[in-house]
Image (tube, rainbow, N blue to C red):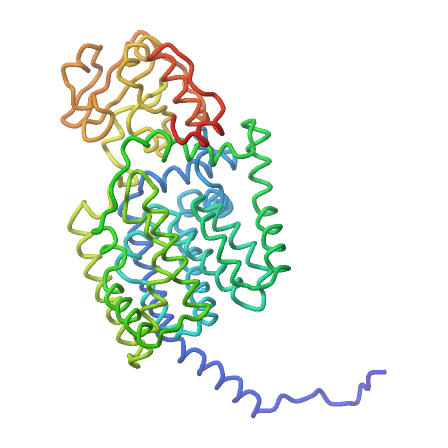
Length: 480
C-alpha cells in the first residue's frame, strides 16, 4: 500500500546536471550536421519557389487524382511520392509540396547517419560529402532522386547490420519511388544469412502487393505501371540509344572523383577489400550499368552514385585525417556558388515553370485542351491531353479540341508555322499558337489512360493497323 506519509522521491541535482551535459555534448557534436541540414533544406525549399519541373508536377497531379482532387493521372509513375504528397495535402496542396521536401531532406539526414555508422565512417564527413553541388541541384528539383537515395541507404544499412530482416521494407519502398532500384536487390546477398534473404524477398513482395492489386483491378495487369514505364522510356526509344556521356559522370561525381581515385590507390596498396567495400563497388557498377542501358541519358540517372562515391571519399579523407569541417565548408561554398548560378541563369534544370506563369493564362479551359505542355496546364487546373501526332491535328480540330503548341519543344511540327496555319488560328504569340474550330467545343474529361493505350490509339489512327496489345510481350521483345 502506498504510504501517504512518505516523501516524493527527490530528483538529484547531479542527475539533472548529467542529463544536461549529455544533451549539450550531443548538440555540440552534431552542430555541423545541424547547420548542413538547415542550409541544404533551405536551399531545396527556395529552389522549389523558383519553379516546378515536369516530373514533379506529374507526381503532384497523381497525388491529387489518387486522393480525389484531380482529373489527370499517369500510371507509369511509381506511387510512393504521390502517396506522400497526398498524405501531406492535409496542410493544403501547395503546402504539401514544401512539407514533402522538408520530410525527404529529414529522411535523407537520418539515412546518412544510419548508413555511415554501419559503414564505419564519420557521419559528419559522409553527410557533408553527400551534399555536394550535384546533389543540391538534382535532389528534389524533379521530385524523387533524394527520396530514392535515402531509402536505398536505409536498405544498405539494414542489409549489412544485425537487423537485416528490415532491409526488404526499405528496398521495396525505394523501388516504389524509382522502379530502376530493383537492380540493387543483390546487395542483400552480403547479409550472409539465408533466413534474412528469404524474409527480405517476402517483405519486399508484401510492400509491393497493394500497388500490384491496384494495377490489376483498375488496369487489368498487376505490372501495368512498370510495363507502361518501360514502354515510354525504353521500348519506344530503342532506336535512339544515346552513348555513354563522360561529362555526365564528371557532373555527378564532381569533386568526389579525385577522392575516389585516392581510395583506389589506397586499396591498391592494401590489396584487400572488405564486405562494405564490395557492397559499394557493386552499387557503383549497378548504377553505371542502369545508366548505360537507358536510351536517353541524363546526369540525374547517375544520382545513386552519391552513396558509393561519398563512402570512398570519406574513407580517403579519414585516412589522411582531414577534419569534417573542411568538407562541410567546401560543400556549403560550392552550394552557394551553385545557388548564384541557378539564380542568374535558366539553363541549370530544364522544363521548369513558375508556379503562376502568365504564359498559361492564354486559355480558360472551357473546351478540352490538347497541348505539348499538357502536364503544366493540368497542374494549373486546366484539363489537358497530350498534343496530337502531326497526322491527327485535323482530326482533333474537328472533334472540338483547342490545340496549343509551344514552339520551343516537341513535337517536330511545333516550329512549322505554315503547317499549323492550315488550321483555324484562334490566338498566336511569339512562342505559341492556338488552333481550333470555335464553333465546336469538346467537353473536358479526365485523362487517366495508360501511355500504352494512348500510343496504340495514335498508331492505329495514323497507320491503320493494330499494334501489340499485350504490354508484357513488348517488354520481352524490347521494342514497340
